[in-house]
Image (cartoon, rainbow, N blue to C red):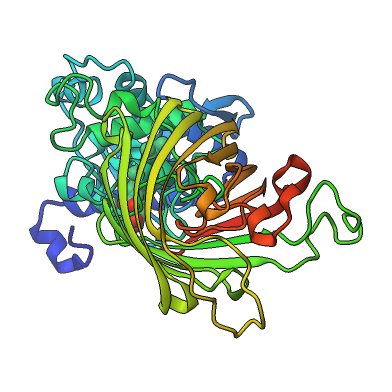
Amino acid sequence: MNMRTSAGDLGNLSPKSPRFVRNFRWGFAAVVAVICLLPLTLESQGLKAATNPAAPSPAVSGPAGGPIPLADALGVHFVPGSSSTFEIARDGKTYLVNLADHTIQEKDPPPTSAEAAAHLVPAHSSSPDVKPGAKIFADNCANCHGQGGKGVAALKTPDFTNPAVQAVLSDAAVTKVIREGKPGTEMPAWGGKLSDAEINAVAAFVKSLGPGKKPEAGAPGAGTPQMAKVYTPADDYLFSMPTGRRLDRHGLYFNFTHRFVYGPAFSGTGGGDTLAGLDNFSISSFGLRFGITDKLSVSAYRSPSLIDRPIELGVTYNFSDEHDGRPLNAAARFSVDGQNDFGKNFTTNFELMLSRSVTRRAQLYVDPTVSLQDRRLVTKPGSLASVPPDAPGINTFYVGVGGALDIRPTVAMVAEAFPTLVNGPELGIHRPAWAFGIQKSVLRHAFTFGFSNSPGTVVSQRAGTRASFLGQPWADTPGGLFIGFDLMRQIY
Ligand code: HEC
């Protein structure tokens, strides 16, 4: 539009054009003014009107005192979750007005009804889960993400049908973004607004827009239908046992584990004085994990001097994930640890981390682990700086078994045990190491508080118990359980 039409031009051009332009501008300015002056309540009402086209339009008092459907009369619709963008309908077209950027763009032309049907409700879908997801998407997300999730340029929303966009969005990432929003962007958090089931359904729908994942194109039962039944672990550990969960591509994760092994939590003379053992020395280990791809990750982890100062380096490959419609989660890890900061007493470990969702709220874990040249778990004698003694290497095999049960959307009960099947007694292990705890996830963090009889958190020490570590034969009974906690943070 030429806004600088001069008086001279007016004579030459069709007189209707500039007047229309001016009228449009005034009309538009009036609309903006009305919107700015409307009380906030209208915004929430308008939000409802925008999310649910069938809902009655918001009625507010007009100048005459009677109720008028103002937003509808003006063709204005608020975009749910946005405080800077609204839609305005003119001549059968819809425009997105962004007050923050001072931009106006035409919204994607509405798809033909056949297209819409194809996008929103796959015609030959064998999946019952995508349909409700499509409806939730149309009601809550299409305003910003476009019909069929193709994205809206003015809002910088990604095109979910683009393979490149889908490639970097893991199922877990989609669910997470929907639940928690994207801070610093217009993407709102839906955590409190949609139920877990609705979030899973709409996440499944978003993923179904990707190539090869369309329910009608993919293998029957592949991918999305299962997602609603798939458990997503909050941490890389239950307590000391690895969940084998997939990391985000280029994701960086910190893992802290604290074990207060020097005082039992439930018994002992000083229990009260040392706050159930929490006042005692902690064995505090610390590690980093990095996702090279969403399947391949590397890790480095160190435990302190009290427990022989091992450094463990590992490589993990996740070759099957239930989020992809596979029947099982499976990952393999190869790791080597050396005591005295990777200086001596090396152990080589092969772990298979298998798990399967029982429901969306519960998962079972089995981790068979072979450790070659493992060492007996004893606390290191002498000063903190002294070098751990040489110890004979013993080949061993243990099977970690565990479970997680979500008792609330972000809180899980976890339990695990590590029965050593080969060469337990040779390593001073007479009873299985075991632990239980409660795990809470908050944004990109997980916190686990629990009780255990095993001071070790590296692979080679995990099956060892407190009794042999401290030389206290009674220390593996329930009265000898000690307190510990884990902290996980995803940095990127
Ligand atoms: C107020 C507008 C708005 C609404 C409503 C909205 N989104 Fe978004 N969403 C955005 C924006 C903007 C982005 C891009 C953020 C960025 O810059 O990475 C985004 C990003 C996303 C992403 C991808 C994040 C990534 O890491 O690339 C997903 C998935 C998503 N939204 C899903 C949804 C779903 C599902 C709904 C409905 C329940 C929804 N959005 C509703 C604005 C919105």
